[in-house]
Length: 414
Image 1 (cartoon, rainbow, N blue to C red):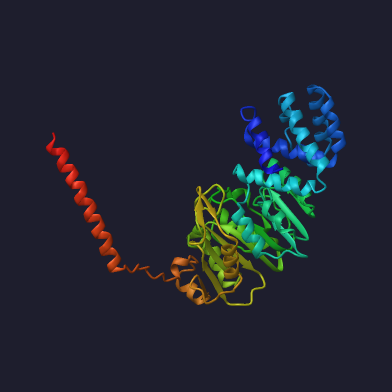
Image 2 (image 1 turned 180 degrees about the vertical axis):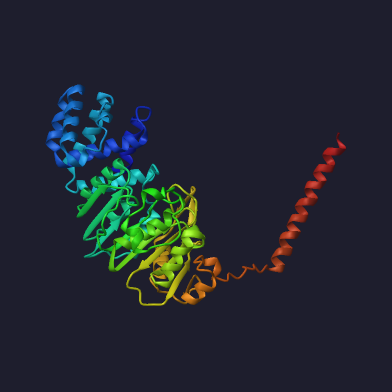
């Protein structure tokens, strides 16, 4: 039984009844309710539709973890609702590892539907291989559905996101995974939340979002890495970086997915880059191939910040040529993912894909951190085998002569 495939049948069942995003929320909530009260939910199957819906609404209203859910979504057809409930009840009844199976199923479902607010498998796999979370506290101020931070299994995980429904689903996934989580809805760039002093920040914040500077005034994270320049509406990448540093303790590290434009843009971004570089807070920058994100074909980069950095150099990695595209989707093998992680972690220093640059060298490049400023890529010249090329040319000439003769014959008959 492949439940990740089976659930797609119910997605199709509800097409035309509700948007896919709503059906996914419905599945997540019913699966969670069955986890916590299988017998109670199973008994609902013997009620008529009106009573089933009323009971489900009462149960969600009385559960703090489900009060975000729009209970009007329960008002689908009676047969459809009963079939979905029965599906999860049967899974719960026959599987001792129901929690893990449902976590896997829901994650696979979100990925297959390419929902917003979810990290791609590429992003999650890189972080899982790169970041050791044992005994540590992890923070993500833009967690989306929380797929990556949940997969990292930190000792304690602190998750924030601006979207109420998104954070609701993330809380369900976190409970299914059995992790210790502090999770709530919050606008991390605007809400003046105190620093948690965490060991790790791991985040893939939204890029290109517009900000209103007047809403940010007085935030403590802006004072921690103070920038004199006025905050423009396009400064979200810099703000996420400042916010991440503010959340770290004195020995902490941050791993952030950001668009490469931040690595060389002027204005507020440039002033922050200069400050971070001069304060020796940037450990590495890695350019990744296009398609790293689930719903975008733009190139991305990983910025690693380290408050306890010892080396005075910055490690630059050019990973843009890793992976292949399959059906428009970027695929990285386990070996390629491990190679990227090894390069980021300072292994394979002899590779032509990595370069350690000094602060002085970065200064001379106006504090740009884009790989194109530091890597010299030699043109790839393909050497041809003259004998083989002449043979191929001879074959083409013969084919041309035969085709020309046929054409002349046809023309003579006109």
